[in-house]
Length: 579
Image 1 (cartoon, rainbow, N blue to C red):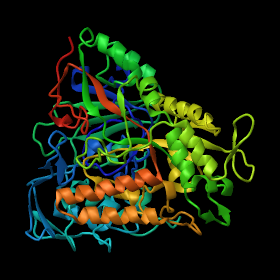
Image 2: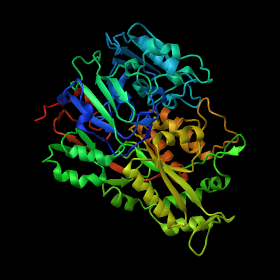
Image 3: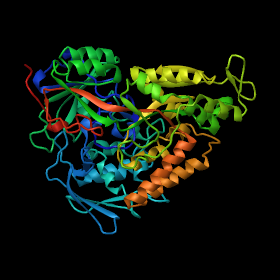
Image 4: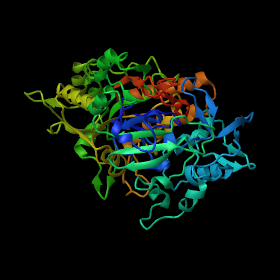
């Protein structure tokens, strides 16, 4: 994952380990190598439309800014496109003052009207499926903020009741009204909102208008993305680095070779590379940064959706019965040897993760018990629900069906593929047959979001300090309520979908947590959500790796953190000349 914090609403996490890089030959062009930062990603971008993005990394951390941002070193909110803000005494009104003379990358003025358009016409528009809208809902009635123009420089956000993460609403990117307004209303011939079909990855780079430090210069499928300095960026004279190149590489081994050859600027320090890179750190003129436990989570999740489409169950009825049996999920949790996973897959460079909230967040419940590896406990739970073993110790349900399911994850991520292979082995010890299949990430996302045709997946979510950024995971109609997903706008409806009492309880607690302004009381609420999630296991959490990245010493100004990585202040970084 390329970690540059602009907004921490929850995304699907494509890769657990950090930055990758690629060959020098890929970035020959108008800029010299001394002014080009060379990085890479594992897969092609899925969209250039921020609103439709559900995966990380994505281009928007380089290309867009909001009114404010979060400093990953301090956790404090800082001005960005807005120069200041005020909060009313009743905590119901936020007023922002924009910086003067802001411009878009095409030279057009960026004004309060762009902010009003971005929120009222896009983010708060129920016809447009925005991933972050769930994080803007307030109170039991789930009302959304009202956004209005005060004058040419000021915009006001108003809510109906106190909302602790209110300020976070202003960290979403501002979008260009003069380009996107004509697509924000109406539907296309397919009956879907026009906005869903714009700024796809086939859009010419020069048509993508942005307000961040970089703009997209070129994209070549399966090869690379090239970003160049935005000449109208509000921080005068910045960024220092003229060009950033992301190569699309499917092999982390290739990235390692290129980094060690001296032509690459940064690489993730994945566990299997750590010892080698640590020995070469001084000689290779690079530094390995360790930010401690990474933000975010990794997990497996079963498809608990009991609904049907066109009279056909989304999940095979036999498997659905297993998956929706609590003791089955708990048995699986006990059967996964996380400590072995840390030692073998992560080479000791990680920690057991028991919660949906990142370990470094102040809201993480340190007293959560989790599921210690216990094969006998797992078997006992299964037997208590009528499962049986044959003479080969293969598991069957009470109706004589062999227990097996498919586990999918994104192909190309060696760490995640190794995790899946171990899970397959671990579950064999309790008689479960697992068909483990790494697949293309875009295909995987389509299954999780559209067809809903899957048994179990191994992935993760990005994380941050604020629990409400995960509201889209826990609201029953949330855009990332993936274990029991409602259909996306325009998709075929689902009949007979069931939401359990514990799902509804978690959603209600998230509402309560967001409206509570006292930190200790908020923490108590989120402790309770973590306990319920741990009990009912919609996600079976696995291992939290350390956030480690190797960065060339020619990159100057690095201020590394687990939350922001090494490039959160990319506009401030400089590149020393290569010797």
